[in-house]
Figure (cartoon, helix red, strand yellow):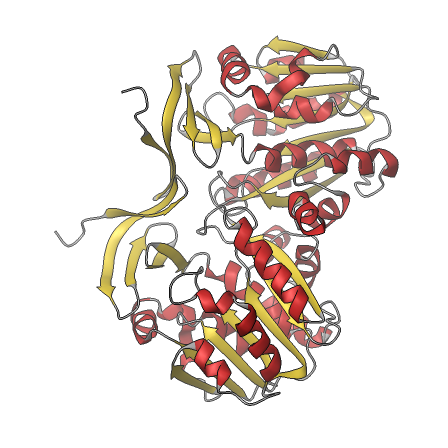
Length: 283
Length: 283
């Protein structure tokens, strides 16, 4: 009985993406249903409330694109906030930058961290033990509200799709608060959903950030296990963003250790907006 | 009973991508099983031998990326060959270029054309009636073999994944023959599989084309219904390829009518090779 496999599917508008495997854990936390499955190709994969979050095989597609465009281009980066990110992948990419002296990880669901540390330990790896990391089990919106002005150099929003308890992470109110607690040259980096499967949410995020920050730029790349496989990340700042102005020595060192991201890839990804999204934003 | 819906899944290495809907036709031709399903989000979708080929919703992701990088950058383009392409999408993008005087479409399976014309008519649309188009029900490999030297300006290989009857379309022999029948400045454009889901096949195509042609370049973009969602297209020529040297007036006119492709998108897509593929090709 121990090796029985099953299909676990994410359902999305009449389509489904499923992984077959042995379920390692299935548990309902205070916030959501958490499943970890062992799949022959994707390795271990994490599902929250019916949506695939990450897998050992393809997590780098997501985490490298969230972290490196911001950290490789910003000069001052001593203090970093991660909202969500309970699987540890965003922390792992952040600790590669020696200039960072403090990382606050604010995850609402303690169970996600516990389960990730136990079943997906390759994702966070040694980063969980990094002395610069402090973990706070808290609501990201509340955390931001109680943070003083000009506190963080970079904020990463590494959250799931809009839902009852994550909706506010996509709101004007929240973005305004993030702007307030960022240093003047600071960068907000957020996953910004799929231009295909979550087109309306995607466009709303882009429009909101454009209204609130002086500049915002969106890159498009791939996350195989997410609906449609196309994903986006948006970077916003109150001063001119210069995402291709790199600390080259550091960036070249970091790209050597990356599976997906490199400087050319990054600069190109910011030009990959599908024509239909350009037209919709212009209209 | 008429409105009963069902799940049809493509299975790939322990994962599956399924569409729910009413099956409009399910038929086994001389070569393969053909299914057309009506899905609420993707619209009508075509499956051949268990693999999703195209859908009304996302076919432009594929066809625009196969056709426009080649046709927008080549000066002389009177004569075009399409191998496969029985859904009509590649023809539809080709007929937008007034300089083309002759398009030979060589599809092995007549049923794919018949079914596409009947159930997926929005894909081919009026292009099926274009006077420049000649349809040949034939084996692409045989067609190329019997074609005289220097005949076509552009060859599009718009085929399914390697299988018993399509394997040769990925062979050295076939690529050599394509080179022979291309005009000296001609371009071979082929779908080149996913760097993620079909990594070994993908890398083999790239290495083979690099060995046989003077130059070849690969672009990466998205096809939501294909395994992993990441897809690639490779362009090869016996002379220097200059895929960003465009006839701008024509290209700008064409990009206006595109859902996905535009000149910036194209130029960026050629730099989207994931780092792990770069490393593997260099090793």
